[in-house]
Image (tube, rainbow, N blue to C red; front, side, top):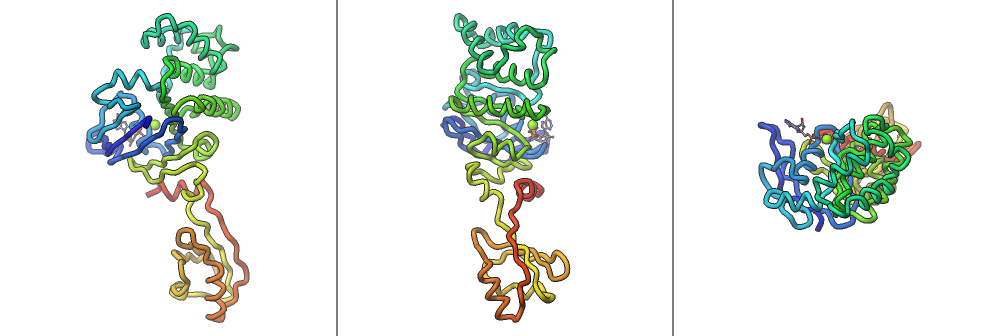
Length: 302
Ligand code: ADP
Ligand code: MG
């Protein structure tokens, strides 16, 4: 396992930023940690990179416990912090040399820096000081820095925040490329980003994991399809009780209702039978898929 988090709780004062969080991340996965601001994403990443300790629980990266073996953990983890702190007065190579020194790369330094510059596409801007670079290029420097010591696990905290649409596409592409070789955990509050980049999504809200699934199964996270139906007469809510697998009925207006079936149930045939036996006509019926944004909102507004 690349990352194991067991029952981690982190409090700032009395506030719980993480509440008994557990997860396992397998080698080679690209995992999206998705949640609104304040969900606890950065806190979890800081614990995994040994910047802050948890109050309860334990975590390990590539088998090294973050509290017992922080030096070993840092050797196997690359980290791009949320604010991507860089030395703006340094040239790109100068900065990467400085980072290589911290990791004691020795003779491998020049080769690794060249490789990372090529991988992250920094050649074009290589003559510039970091302070002169666009946000997109600064993120590339941040990613190059995180990858320099060839870590097995890469942790990127909101790597695309503040990028324009073109830069966004480039950085996502770069992350996918890197993900072929490494385990990647990235945080974001953008659902489409997870869809575009990640194999798996972990949704976190107020310190709790509220969903964890393969991105391909996002439909199960999306929740069920709703059915919008128009009847020929007024219906009273209690009349719906006899429809099997109907979870919820909400009146939209007039004789229009929004029906929510129970998990994985298609209630349309039963709905027709129910209408016929109650002498009700269905004038129209259409399936309404919950959008990603809406389901994210539903999962995280609590
Ligand atoms: P996210 O990265 O998902 O936006 P954070 O992990 O940064 O969330 O924050 C989780 C919660 O912990 C938030 O309510 C935030 O205000 C709080 N928090 C984070 N860092 C600190 C800190 N150093 N001191 C006090 N509260 C903090
Ligand atoms: Mg954050």
